[in-house]
Length: 173
Image (tube, rainbow, N blue to C red; front, side, top):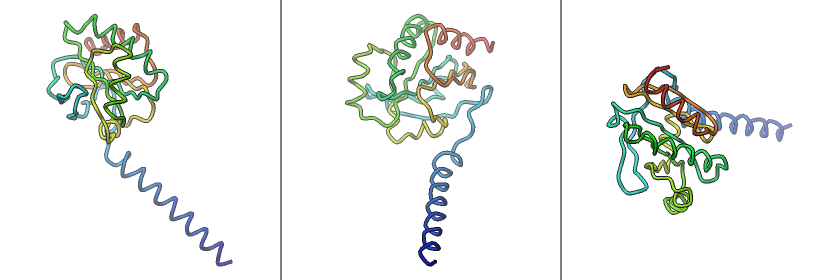
């Protein structure tokens, strides 16, 4: 009888601990990402050694693409994003690839193989990922020039989708 009580107590304690970890790391610290609301600001180190601050990009349409090297669909999507980036970067389109929790060495090899030229932000501690409530990869957030979220897309994108979402970020339609 005592063993059951101890086991039940341990299970309750374990569940309470798990709930606290989830609440403190994801739910309580992050505002929901919603179309039409301002995109949360952040500053991140870039793979090339610089930094990027989202609020400093205001006035431009921005794509935040959350990815990781262990995500099989990310490589094809990165190629699609790169093609649209090349097409519209001179018009002010900014793409920031946000890698979650991986080393710069791992990321560099991956980026070199894909030929991606847009900036890659390092989110080693998953701070930005948590703030944007990213649970599945790839995930893409298109931000309008006024700083509001225009599109929140989970899953891989084709070049046609990237171009359509880019247009929506600019026009609002």
